[in-house]
Length: 288
Image (cartoon, rainbow, N blue to C red; front, side):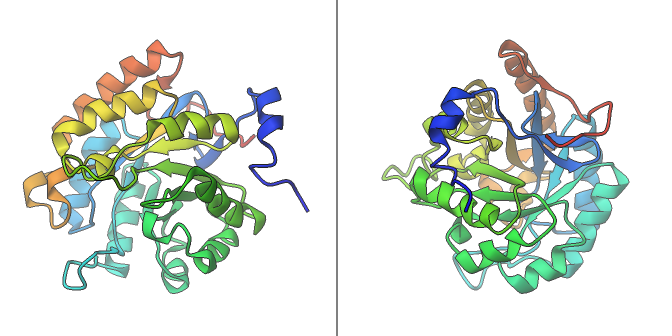
């Protein structure tokens, strides 16, 4: 029986240079010196929307394209996503613009439907402790982006990752997306302290989702820059061709122009701490 992530804490302290770089596609990775920037709309709404997003974001440069196709909504009457149609739109948009694609799956059935279309399988905050789903993705031959639960401790977060890794899938990317607080001025409380702790405690890549943490588009750029400054390996940000017309989470979506400007400022922050922003690697990624 191998040691858990928590058991390896002292080992990581003695060997802080040990970091896992996860190949997302032949030329995009997460966890290396290059930051991985992920962007796209909360929900896939149409082919035109996704094509416009992919065309602009690929030039920004953003490395990976996100889009919700199966949507976990608080109200059963809210838009639940386009499902398989959305998967096809997302996948084709990514392929046409050379971008790997990321979307959330919420069940074994959705995992089966989405497996061949997605480059990264996302487990959302509501399912962080859906242990049967974690076991299912542990058998998938795809990287998994695991989001921290709404009120999960860091230990609980790591144990969720351990479910995936213990099942045989070592390609886990941790995502801090804010935890529930008492102040309504932001949607959640972005825990950047957790990013620093996770980088010390584990060898896994850690990215930050400031969109769901803030819930307000005017706060996202500052939080994204802070995330990079404190050591995050990348950010995941919601953007839309016409943000205020977004079917879901319109309040937190950046415009494509705002996202392009944000990438420029993230490149400056990355350079200040010895890292870089680049659309793709010049050479195929070799997993460490």
